[in-house]
Length: 502
Image (cartoon, rainbow, N blue to C red; front, top):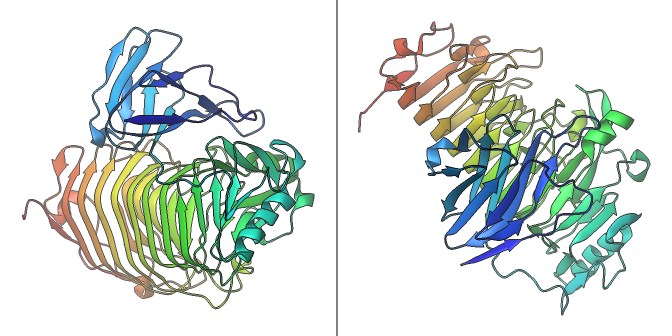
């Protein structure tokens, strides 16, 4: 049994509302509020462990009501005066709600397996080897890039970032390089647009933007791991300079592995694997503001063979989605061509907290989207939970699976507030069909204020072969299509509804 906590980076304020210990060991609690003048939105405590541990959360006042989400985990909680305790035996990403305080996220990672040493053969430490400034005052871009390039030149090595704050412009990862971010380390954007080259235009926001980290197109076997943080300072840059950034854009990469890091505060969509293959993302924490539009945590763009496992995503916009854009779309102009399909993508054991759609297929459908699965998904709060929303392109969506999804609350309203939306929409750029949708073993604790929407924009966007099996809505099983309480739209084949069929 072991617990690893990490030093609170000096740039982050400590929470005034919560203190956390794990088996008696103090774990710093960060107050997250990146928007200038926006106050604290939520808090988070981050640690790694193995075995069984006791987590204690204390507040300044007596606790009246405390819950630990996802509720599906059914974690027993003990409350005494101003303290609550619970036991963890597995890595979990939890959201603790106590009385009227802002939520506390418990990011309890699994213990790291064989983390690299700070120095040694094949290890290129950005501080000891390249004199990077760990205080965040001087730019560390050249030092970080030099460590990456040195690891590449020896045929594959580790670019090691120790605890500290490292201010960077754009950095490019190369083949067989392992970028390791030690706990307590932060790669932080400068928030100065002059330090970056324009990489995209976000049309809906009418702003230009850049990539903080990216991969070299055509690269192979790139990895990013550790318990450190990639910080875009995006809310500040967006508000003060009207300039955007993506945190990490792997482009045209095969064999990408991302494990354990925190990605926080991008000004626009945060983590965008784009036209990549053989991608594995595990133990990732995406922390975004919930006060600015268009800040998705993870968009899988035209990739194949992707596994996303054990992740939490908090944002205003879509936490998880798949997309396929036109080659001449401004967002995709810097991606390697040609356009590719989205195929064989799995999201498993993922927690969502959003003002928009939790688990989404769409938007952008210029290429086929096929064999996409959301499994063991947990919605803390959203406007829509399960969303299949093709528009912007006429390629088909086929073989989509949602299974073992637990929906706690639909308390936000970005339009079409409901637990289920399958809607092909024509917006003047084509519309394609959706076929082969299986939605199974769904618990809907809060159905929202609107009924499900299952509708087709026209014959080109027809919906067919939709199955809902073993779905419970606010304690009531769905046994027939009539139980959905929605009309059968034109160009929609009546969904098959089953319950308790074995």
